[in-house]
Amino acid sequence: MARRPPARVRAGLARAPRPYDTAPRRVVPGLSAPARRQVADFERTGPGPGSVALAVARWAAWVHGRRVHEPGPPDDLPCCDTGAERVLLQRALHALPGRAVRELRAVLAPLDAEYLARLRPDPRHNGRERWWTEVLP
Image 1 (tube, rainbow, N blue to C red):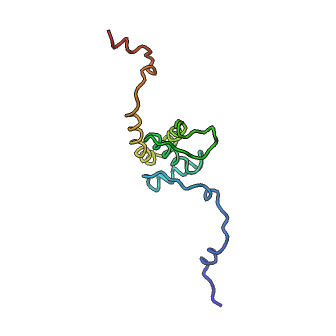
Image 2 (image 1 turned 90 degrees about the vertical axis):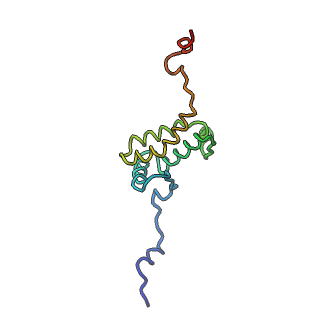
């Protein structure tokens, strides 16, 4: 009787799922493989797998004016509150090493530029409540 190769034997065995196999594999588009690995390391120590890519997708959808509907608790409104996503992205930018930060900033730069271009400054937030009296005689 012929002997089966070890790879064939291992392929037929049941494999126990590893914890990271159950999570969705979301990656940030536009990042290199080393940067993706560093983002995955950041996610493993904190927010969870795929959270940075989900935050980028939600931020992009909000900047472009699309509503994002993700399953979640009824009090969670991802279409309206993007503060948590942007805070997570800022935490990632501060925690990642240099090259990964540059690549992630390159992905976020057009989104941030579009957001800031549509943003109207509110003079009340500058500490000048009556700004029109300074401009008008």
